[in-house]
Image (cartoon, rainbow, N blue to C red; front, side):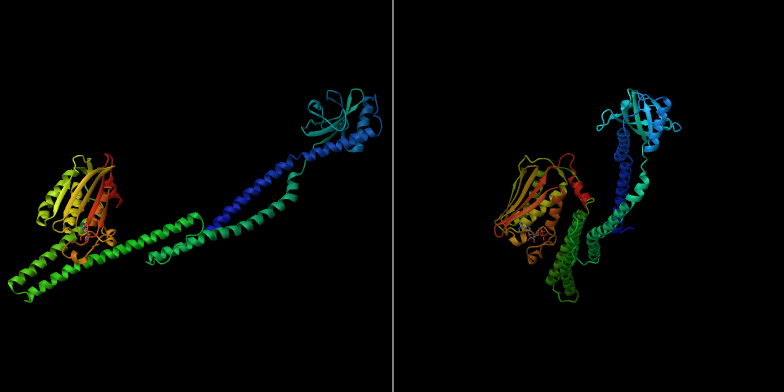
Length: 478
Ligand code: ADP
């Protein structure tokens, strides 16, 4: 009873039954009030009246007794009730005195008969409130001869049962069969794609993404198929990202570990015995351990940003002060590398809401990278300016630039342009963290770069309104 087909069939059958009940009821009402049957009675009464008049002139000046005999004779011949009434409609003679009396004819409600001049057609009730149909003919100077017949009782139910029940039943059976076929066809068109989707979902659960859900059938089913396919792609991408992540982390940890193990081994078995060699080995071990520590710290940082909770605080931020501090911090390093570090920080930057330490981390990363990739004699510029709805900050350098094939990927986790050069630096997580923080502030970051000429990292940070919950929103989204 739960399958789509059975439900559709049940719905169709109920609709058919309701329609047939309504049609049957309407037919019954139509039959009961059928005007044709009433018209037939009037015609018959008129025929009788015509026949009586055609027999010859009606007797005049009858006594009460002869009038009674006259109407009784007519009644017997023509099998109708015959009355004589005065012009006001009061019945004065009745062919059936023993039947329930008809006292008045309600002539004012009777209508003239089109076919016979002076004749009327009407209805009257007898003493038992039964309805009689009658026609009149003028009779003598001031009398009416009246032919009456009880209003026919049409055997509605019997007629219905005999003539209409069967066709209605047949119609119901045919409609039922048709609806069974329709229910099967419709339910198949819906259920088949759904069955296939269920099997695709099971394949996805098993990790098999090769099968695609059908995107045919009714709109809703098609939309479901498309959503399922898009979900499968996302799950696949997420799994791939997770696998890549684990592979990257293992790889990045393995390299310094191998190095540490090698130099420790050399110290242990005496291969590095001289003070110089010992010193060099210890330094390498220290540097590699430091690199691992930094990477683990960055990974923890990313994990915190991903989790959202506790990664950010929210308060008023003086962005100019944040940027000036960054410039001060890197001043000595720039001087040491003979790079010209410039700042363009106007005083009219709008007030911001966000996490000052995290924003400092963004620009530390960008300036650090710029200095790393800019040779002596080059320059690095940190420039801020008000932009519609926020602040635009650019970190420009005249360094090595980024090859076009790498530009779109450098914000990915673990992505490094030059793996060999990166050995001395980070693990390709710095820009990923940077982007996370910028986006957590509702901002965006991109880069324009020309290999050999330099790069321009552009950050846009929106000015948070008083009721803005950008940071909180980012947290709760994750
Ligand atoms: P890392 O922490 O290893 O430096 P990042 O995520 O900070 O990693 O940077 C990713 C890659 O982008 C690096 O491999 C680096 O080569 C490149 N890169 C970043 N900033 C610059 C820059 N200003 N100029 C040239 N290349 C850059």
